[in-house]
Length: 102
Picture 1 (tube, helix red, strand yellow):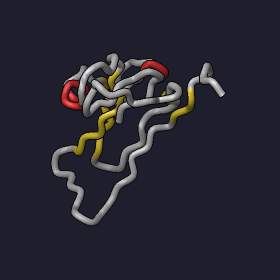
Picture 2 (cartoon, helix red, strand yellow; picture 1 turned 30 degrees about the horizontal axis):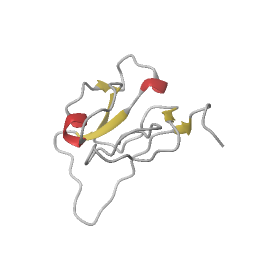
Picture 3 (cartoon, helix red, strand yellow; picture 1 turned 90 degrees about the vertical axis):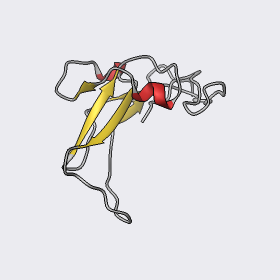
Picture 4 (cartoon, helix red, strand yellow; picture 1 turned 45 degrees about the vertical axis):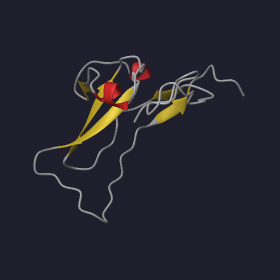
């Protein structure tokens, strides 16, 4: 999940503007179901989805500033499965940046 930033590019074809109207900042740690781990990136998002996936990641236990998080990746732990037809809920508490235009 790449957090929107004003002026960002589409991560599938980064030649296309994503048209995000404001920045979104994480306000709390990601909430994942049992058997899943959230990994955070604070690297600038400048490439396509594959390049974003290869970015340096931090675990929830690492030291980072939530307002600097640019992306979150949810990874299933060994032995965890998501069967067809079932769903899980993945959440990231967030807010619109305080300098957003109304």
